[in-house]
Amino acid sequence: MPKKTTIYDIAKALNITAATVSRALNDSPRVKKATKELILETAKQMNYEQNKLAQALKSGKSYNVGVIVPYINSNFFASVIRGIEEELYPKGYHVIICQTHDQENLEIENINSLLNAQVDGVLMSISNSNIENNPAFKNLVRKHVPLIFFDRKKDIKGVSSVTIDDFKGAYMATQHLIEQGCKRIAHLSNDQSLEIFQNRFLGYKQAILDAGFELDSNLVVETTSKVESGSLSTKKLLSLNNPPDGIFASCDFSALGAIKEIKTHGLSIPDDISVIGFSNEPFSQFMELSITSIDQSPMEMGRIAANVFLDEVNSKGNVKSEKQVILAPELIVRKSSQKESLILN
View (spheres, rainbow, N blue to C red):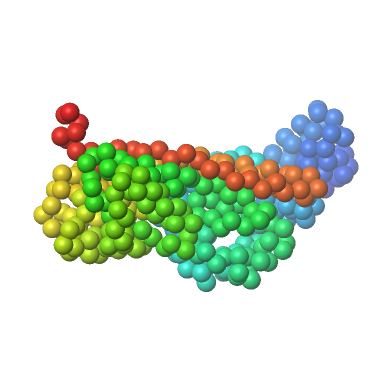
């Protein structure tokens, strides 16, 4: 195994002190520009690699950041992660990605693993509403590790967050269905213990009431963010004596499940039932029957979350400024809800 180049090897090659080499490699202003350039070029030629662990011990930073998401195979979370990486990589940070599969025990394990890895901060989308009660989370806060929630959050004092206006997005989606002539609009909800799904239900409810319709509890069915669950929930809705003529799903996957079930029953979309989802997953636009959805600007959400972290980790005197960033949703209208009769008019 070849011997690794050290600062002493570089110093010997240039006939200078090891201290001068160290200062140059750490960009010290005490070293002249010409000398610094010579040292850096020599280090490159000699394949010198800096000791990251030593750097971390000296600076007090590991330059590793943990990102925790429910699922990596969701385009929304993948895009958020990309936004985070694009902001942090140029600043010298590495991103460690963990997923919880929406399971509390995995969330705890992920937090503990990141703490053991001495990460400089954690950016996460929570899997359950009781996060502040778990020991791992309390340990994270106690150690003053910067924590930023994105998308799914819990209102906790001193913790920043970057989210979409879920209430407004749900209101826009439901209002769009009303404008398409729907009078019995169902809602495929999700875990109401999570704030984002509470707000999506409340936005739906408010749009229904503002339109002068009665809120029918039979039209609100709780699902999960899976296609199969959306299908089963829609099957229940279609079995009602007075089934819905519009469906607002809390995510695109349950909206896709709804569409599959509606087609199985031989009904037309959007003429018999209009459907709208939430998240604007890529498949929603590439299907033959493209799905109307609410876009959440995931890349921007990731970039902003990363910059909130950078502000916190670089603040002097460990002064934390809690930030609550709320992004505006965008309605993307496609075939699943846009009725041709209304387009012609």
